[in-house]
Image 1 (cartoon, rainbow, N blue to C red):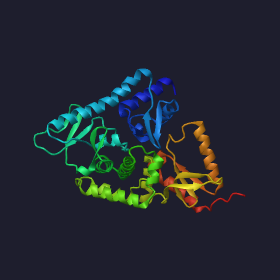
Image 2 (image 1 turned 90 degrees about the horizontal axis):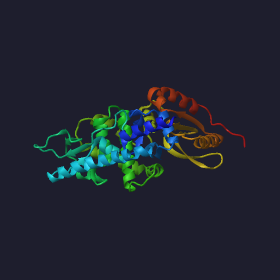
Image 3 (image 1 turned 135 degrees about the vertical axis):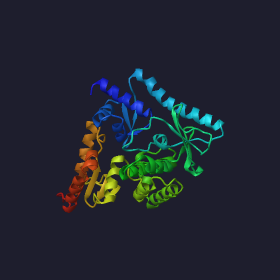
Image 4 (image 1 turned 45 degrees about the vertical axis):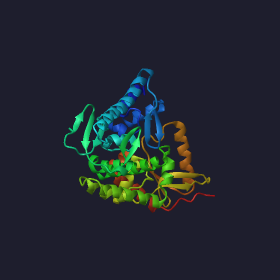
Length: 351
């Protein structure tokens, strides 16, 4: 990709996300193609923060003030309005997609909110709507569903996920993705916001942890307005914070709907060499890999993945891969490949 196109990609992402994290799906919603994102990563302009999440690493020198200014402007806008509302005796809370951006919760099929959202308790004299660069809404949030973040009060990850599933998403796929992202953000917060993807997944490996999160979500749903609850309740039993990426969430949705055969997410398996690998999904001798467009970003990573696959196949595993486009547009094709693989006996490699 020419340097000018990398430059344009970075600027587009800065305008949409500032210095905050974003997913490949959100980048596509912002108008950046998978190829452009992949090239920007290779050029060093975009960094992979953790599995499935990215940040703008750098832009050209002349753009650096713009990057900082975008981030600072958002915080200044929120802080300024929060302070003004506090002077009026209110307790403002950052909510909705703005809260999702702050927590790093993916929202599929919805453009990133351009107007920060602040929630205040219902009062008669306060004008709601867009004002001074924010969207002011009224609503009551229980105090145990609000947390401090970056000097602001923000709806907790789980409350944010419930709000997204109820009000922002329009499909079961996107609702489940938001709730799973919220569950992972909840565990990240429990680790002091310092956890990487693998640590969050390991902490979610306990059945009791996953059941507790579902119970917490159910409790929050019970204190939320009725609008949109039917969709959220439909997918809530499927929330599993072992799922790491939006693509895996979409795959997990199809498994729970019965479109794909059910598999266990994020399992450690041994290759023929004895080396332990963590795979996206596994069922018997079949490994399912949800391959996002950004997963293998360099020749070195691609070579390491080929070595990994050879080692697993030598241990008798069959690997079935699928892409974002396949799971969204042709899940039955993915299901057919998985069923064929499951029907075959494990490959026995010669000693």
